[in-house]
Structure formats: C-alpha cells, structure tokens
Image 1 (cartoon, rainbow, N blue to C red):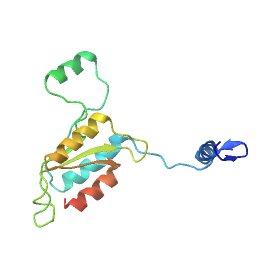
Image 2: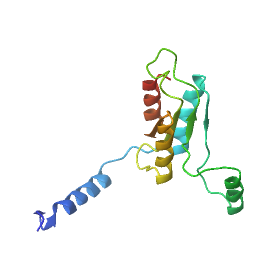
Image 3: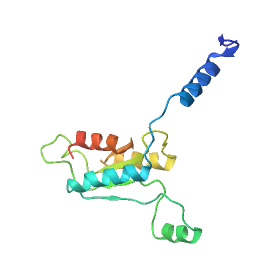
Length: 147
C-alpha cells in the first residue's frame, strides 16, 4: 500500500497542494503564441536574418484546408524556418544548414508528434532544430548559435 498523508496517497497530497498553490499564488499572465511570434519576428528582422514563419496554426474551412494540402502544406512544419547561417567565425557557422523553431507559449504548450518528427528530420539534415517556450527562450538559443 502506498504511503499516505492524512489518509491520502503522497501523489494525491502533492496534487492537492499544487492545486491549492495555483489558486492562492498569482500567476504571471502567459502571452499568446502570436505575441511571442511577433516578438521573435521583430528580433530576426532587426538582424537581417533570412527567415519565414509557416502559418500552419489556426482554424480553416474544410475546403480551404483541402486546397492548401493539395498545394503542399504539411502538418507539423516548424513555426520558424531560418535560412541564414550564423555569423561567420562562430563555431556553428560551418556546422548547421539553418535553424528551425517550433514556438510555444512560455508555459503550457506541448508539441505534437508531427512537430517533433519534423524537428528530428531537420536535425538529421544538418539543421539546428528546437522547441522553444516563448520568444525569449528562442532568442537566447539563437544567440548561442551565433545569430
């Protein structure tokens, strides 16, 4: 029998404590992914990086979705594709072909299986690929790469 705390399992007690903390401790508002994307876009543009955002998110009418699929839109493609190489002279400038970011909210966002698969495949092709929780995390990683 699992250990108990006031007649509850340790797991149940931990869950209850976490729920109590969540309701009593104010949580900093979590910016929407679109806000994070705009912040990252501004940072990339200010540095003259050749990049694009792949607008896979959002709800579409079935007919529009079918047309886009026929045109080649793929599920799970990362949000940000960076075609520029890191600055010449950095350790990564001759190692990576580009960079791919699946951008999520600062907390609470989880990548899909398709997104993970895309990042894995790009990594195998020589791209730096990562899931980043928020623009600040993405910018920090890109700076580490030499962008």
